[in-house]
Length: 310
Image 1 (cartoon, helix red, strand yellow):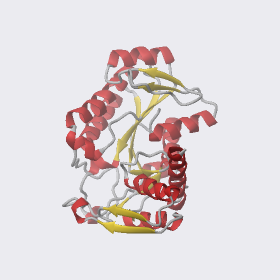
Image 2 (cartoon, one colour):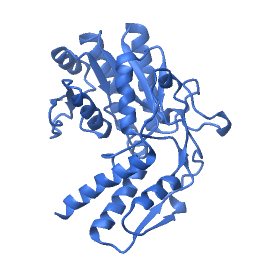
Image 3 (cartoon, helix red, strand yellow):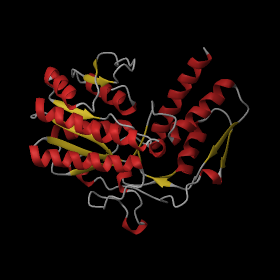
């Protein structure tokens, strides 16, 4: 509940008057968002999760907790697997034991598809999974566990494979918030020019505002079919260069952009986007344009940069 997507989801629930409980890292010193109730628990411990869920007795659950960095998963594959797989198993077991009538949406990933031939785009729920990182492998296994618990125990577990998400509050390890943070810091510092050094500017991906993804979670909790797999995507791809151009157009200082060939991964997928057929069938379509997503992200980092100065 303290993460990027969690913060936006909490705000959506609270706006509708929903009582919100959420997990916090054990002894992690995390503070739950205002208006919510936080519980320190190890999600990889099924008995602890069953005890917590039995006490709260939730109607709906959204499982977002994960090690989310593809790059970091290569340096800590076992830690990534433990959090993403055993954490998912712990939540599913807790649900099975304590609240089997609840409905749950689990945050999965477009990274599960790995490298897809360009002539086989867009990705659909029927595209073969081809994980290319420890992170993606852990998400494929979590996906499989969710399917198993629905099949074997009848749990209403909804699987949402989300593609690249944008929006205010995202970790600056990701490309758009990294760009926006650098621009905001240059603005606040009064620099004559902001210099951005990036990797492959021509790489194309399916980008979606996090608030549109939150609407998808809420929709699946209400009306999703556990027998289907859902993809959250815009249905088209944008290049990193296009995202940079939008950010540069919104900047208050001149921006110089360069591409560092050493930061381009060999064999990188040139293009990837999804067809969110199952969500479309429920009436969901993205509402927030990239310009708004990037503008809101830039404003977020401007406020953070001002706080750093103060």
